[in-house]
Image (cartoon, rainbow, N blue to C red):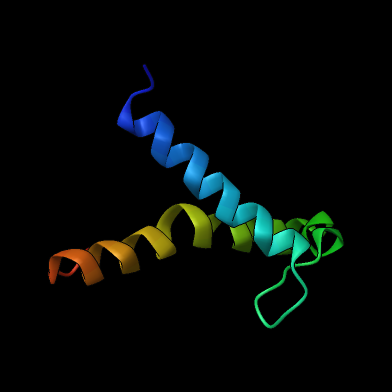
Amino acid sequence: MENKQHQYTVKILGQLQQLFEDEGEHTIAPEELKDNANAADFFHALANLAPAVIYNNLTGKKAG
């Protein structure tokens, strides 16, 4: 049986994949991330900024 972390990981990865595949306002061209500065900005936003926003919205508390 899968644990919750695995289930959440699969769901999050499915949504992230759409960032690179869907055509629209929120699409990111994979070629854009070949630039090291863009890749660093993307991973900082993914690993730090976006989780903080989600945490703030879900808990009503301010994440550092």
